Image 1 (cartoon, rainbow, N blue to C red):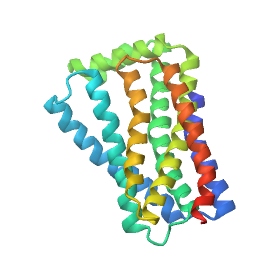
Image 2 (image 1 turned 120 degrees about the horizontal axis):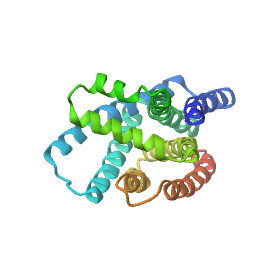
Image 3 (image 1 turned 180 degrees about the horizontal axis):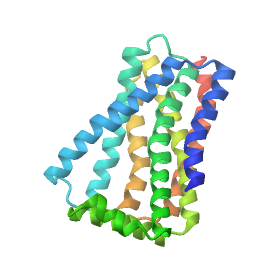
Length: 249
C-alpha cells in the first residue's frame, strides 16, 4: 500500500519534470488536463452515477459494469475533446497531448491511487491496534450501510495478499500511460478535424474500463485484470511513441 501511494504521487511528478525539461510542456495544458478530470469525471460523471443508482436502471452487476465503462469513456473522452477544441486552440502539438495526459492521469493517480492507499494504511493501523471496531461505531453511529461497507473493507484488508496491493502501483502506471495515449489521440482528432477518432477513444476507454468493472462484479480476478491492462498499456505506449512522427507530418 505504501509503495502504491508513493508511486501514485511520484510518477506524475517525475513525468512532468522530465517532459517540462525536455519539451517545455505547457503548464496551461497540464492544468487543463487536471480540470477536465475534475469536472467531467469527478463532478458530471458522478452526478449521473448517483441518478442511475437511485433509479436502479442497471440491476445486475454485469449490466452496471457495461454502463460504468461506457460512462467513463463518454465523459472523459468527450471532456478532453471539448476542452482541447474550445480552450487549447494554440496548443496542438504532440507535446501538448502528453502534457494534457499527465495532468489528467496524474491528478487521478494522486486523488484515487494515493488517497485511497493512505486510507487503507490508516485503517490497517487501526486493525493492528485493535481500535477498528470502536472507530467504526464512532463514525458510523447507527447507519447500517456505513457499518457494512467498513466491515467489508476490513475483510478485504485482512484477507488480501500483500502482493496484490502492490499491483496497485502497476495499475497506476498503466492508467497514466492510457490517459496520455487517449489525450494524444483526442488532440490529433481535434487538430485534424477527425471526429471518428473521438468515438475510437471512447470505445477504447470503455473497453479498458470494462475489465476492472468485471473484477468489481466478481467475474475476473485482480491478476487477470492487471495482465489485460498491461497489454493495453504496452500497445498504447507504442502508439504514443510513434504518434510523435504523425503530429509532425
